[in-house]
Image (tube, rainbow, N blue to C red; front, side, top):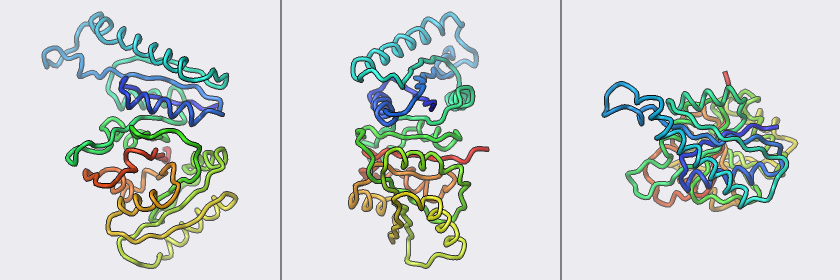
Length: 282
């Protein structure tokens, strides 16, 4: 059984992520936790460093939140056929966003967090929304970031960008292994370098480790040279039938260049392709 956390702010964006998660885990036994967090800073009185009374918080924030969560449950019942493998729970609370997410990840033994991301409509906006960006960098839990225009289709190919510079704890790769085995999709391990150069000894060893780990699956290695890593990813996505991009979070060099930059010219993978972030747990 998998435990899936679905943080929601009741936007279309987060509803799209919920729909994607239900389809994505359609054949698996899952507990889905719909979570809305009212932030502490919403409750400060006139910007003063003290909280509104608890009854005010309950009436103004918590009760309306519970109504909205029940509305989502009705939407799920209306739009999806009954699935005996899926159970849904609603959780409403107030607190600090990341601390609350971490608490629920631990208390509910969460396997995946699924969140929506909103692509930038202008070049000055950050591409990954601040909440999702915070979760995928600060919460050590496998996270699936679902862009606003992503629609679930059966996975065919998953891209795994890496520079082979880090040795992965094989346990961190288990989620992607499970997905590949369940979906029968193909893994495309992608090495991007800014200038043409041979792999060093450590990179060769790490490449061989990945090759061995995924040897029983449909897996291939691809090498691209491009000064801009995000452009190379976009080119690769367009040239193949890529349905998901997967990365290990500790590979910060690649991670930040692919996700956290502010220019979005022709970078459609930010608004169309789900991004699976794997974390090494403590």
